[in-house]
Amino acid sequence: MRFFHRDPSPGTAAPPVHGKVSHFATRRSSGLAELSRLLQSHEALCALDLGSTSPANIRYLTDRGHKTYSEDVLMASTDPSLVIRDEHGKNRLDEKRYLAENLLYENAYFDVVLCWNLPDYLDESLVKPLVGRIWSILKPGGVLLAYFHTHDAGPDAPCYRFHVANNDTVEMQPLNAPREGHRWPGTGGRSNVGGGFRLQRVFNNRHIENLFRDFASIKFFLARDHIREVLVVR
Image (cartoon, rainbow, N blue to C red):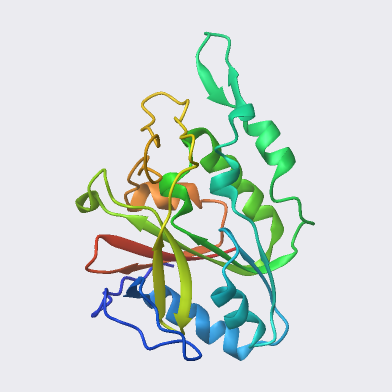
């Protein structure tokens, strides 16, 4: 079942967390607000944050009694040794090796996955295999939160690391690609050389539904900052 809700106040400032003064941009997140209700109503859940380690996210989850893991699968995808040549002599990423080295957890291990904006910036060849792996490590009834850009975002939309500030607000930290740069090997991939990660594609609602077609349900939240949020239930 799918519902649509418009976030009335994206991009507003959040109060400091535990006295910390933040200089990151902030946004309101309706998807996070709904997920937070789940996190507050259950004890001892297991959560996976698909980004570099965030003390704010760890604190938010552990303060509520939940166990948390983090894994930066976007940065892992920039490993130059993953690039191989296909039968046509074109460069591509070795998705089998990528999955053999990342997200190595037992099946049905996690209750919550924070996917953030990963699908928009990950190489095309890795998106569906990674979502398939996430499906397998989520418990039945487990929930995934993800952000997707709309077409209005533009090709230079920055990639952010998201830090939970409170139950309905995230702080956004701009992410940079590795210093030596990285070029997506897939056809039509955008370069990450000389700056942050580049937006690789824009999913419409049908694309998002197809990406999560093996999941039980998906719920959309529409915001005014060219982002659509989804909560997906395994």
